[in-house]
Image 1 (cartoon, helix red, strand yellow):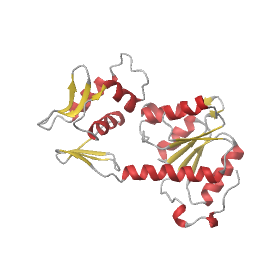
Image 2 (spheres, rainbow, N blue to C red; image 1 turned 180 degrees about the horizontal axis):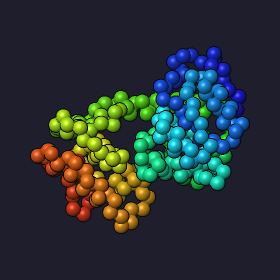
Image 3 (cartoon, rainbow, N blue to C red; image 1 turned 90 degrees about the vertical axis):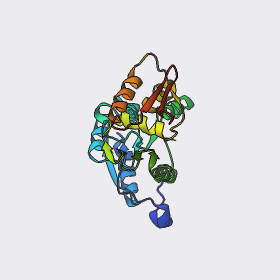
Length: 249
């Protein structure tokens, strides 16, 4: 894992983020190696040795990206990924779209697939080349920056600002929970399309098998109530299928 000296890379190749990287790694030597070299390359770094510590640190200091080991003593790093993507419990105030790169010694195809299916943006197997890890960090951050630059989502009097995670209806701010916001954004990105319940449970909640849960219906009901100030009926139910953003005019 020989680091590439910063002097060998141009300034444009180094990503300078105002928000730090969250390094979740219980191996002291590897964590120190990565912390020192990432800091030398212009990244801010906050460290955690386990899942609970990582969630607490991310809550206080929102990171730009997380580097996540999976074997964290008695804890499984996938629990951190699940908590962030679900936006529940200790991760309620952490961006559920936080970019996460798994950095793990678990390198079999099923294990890598499991990490990606659970929501990882990339998967790096130990041992790795430091140069490759930095390149992957920069690539994931570039993709996320591209998503942020897509700009406002507007449909009628409803406006969503993804960068600020702010929703307004006829100019008035609407305060939503993490899952209400994620559901609204998913529907608003293709407002005339009917999304099936299975799609929404998979994409918003990460359910691989929806079963008989009423979670989606409950969230859709609460979201509809919060948007009730408008004469338009938002979060329209399509019987036996799913939901669309609004009833056709």
